[in-house]
Length: 378
Image 1: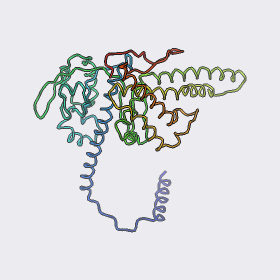
Image 2: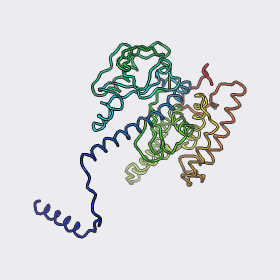
Image 3: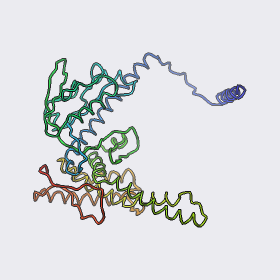
Image 4: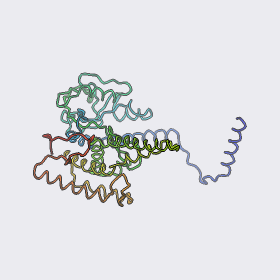
């Protein structure tokens, strides 16, 4: 082993001697200056992360509270804020977080939704949350998760909720009345690809998509589409289809085994994958359609939403072509369908009809929730 290590070192040394390096005199970097610059860059990165999180969450709050009538029993009471503690970020960013958020390791309000119960109660960005519903917020690791649990256990829709805060050294208590919203967490991912997806419980939006969705209309169209996937039960439907497809494939695996051929479960896998893709384009089209209604119920401008697909086509020209084997409709199909939906919504507004998507009578049992009218139509 020792001889092998020496041989490796010798080979690396020979390679370095053979390589051509830079010819200019290197700039000497003061380690202390580099360390200070690193801290500045951490602060820039941390503030940008807060800005992106605030933008994403602010739009998501409006959409999820407006979509409550579409989410069946998958609801949670919310006051419409995001909160963060320095203890909940990466260790090397904790000093930065303490400087940006406030002194100590407490829980601080980082964004307040427009028109939310928190905004009406007077909560502000920078407030330190001391207690919720009379229960103190811990100041040890996992602060945000602990506060979220307390909020889930104490908040009830339209019932007064006392929130003790510390602001500029003074203690005060505000009272908020939570509202129901769809219980799908909307999270920002570090991925650089232009992507967003739903998994039945959560909506994930990448940083790459945040940069692509330059306008709030674009971002709302994307987030509402993913909320619609969860609300309409598409992920559960795909899982059910995959299980059914695997069962059909298993029959062929058994037939092959009787004939003396070991398929190693190939037909089961193929059946599962094929069935999971069944109705994929239809699910995507339905999410576009229902998502636009969610935007309309939130009082957002839906007329600009179809233009997202022209921007997508410009960035990804391959999406223009119609492909029956693709998982998504083509960008022209999506643009035209959304324009028709915009007209449908405009007509409902004109006649004062509820802003709810048109649901056909299902031919088979569906996992999508029943949609009922409520008095909170926009």
